[in-house]
Image (cartoon, rainbow, N blue to C red; front, side, top):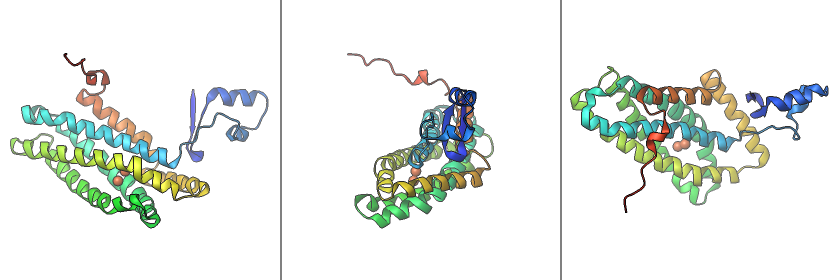
Length: 236
Ligand SMILES: [Fe+2]
Ligand SMILES: [Fe+2]
């Protein structure tokens, strides 16, 4: 059994707690450095948020050929829920409340090669919001009209290509530069602040909830079993 203590951004096993309780050690000491605590740092938090968004992008990618083959057979409400998740969790929380408020200003102030990316990343946030709004509108009625099929397919292709590049650069260039620009204490402090923002935004654990939502969407569209994405060996 696993207990997640979000207030300390830690995760510990039930076994370690019962062992400590058995020898009469106060519960609080279970969170000392000697326990099984596993801290979720600010950068890990940001990167796993990208993981949720990548799963939304995979839904879009899988939908493109279906749009071109038989748009009427697509569950538009599942696509609408995907776009709403991308908007609420990706655009309004991850991008606006974390990256635009804390990450990008610090990276820009620190200068260097990473700082040169910031203006383009901001432009891409804005373009992503416009495309997501288009997807929400095109899927709002619960079915996809013939005239919307090709423009929607192109919107998915454009958003996926942009955001795959965007998140990959953030993971490998922007987040490491941000981490380098902070002291250990500042990083810890901001990690706690991000958790407060997450709670204020979602009234609970936004990440856990987002993972559940994308899992439900994948289930309803038949994408839950990832074995279907294992390719066959190339022919010689
Ligand atoms: Fe971003
Ligand atoms: Fe991001």
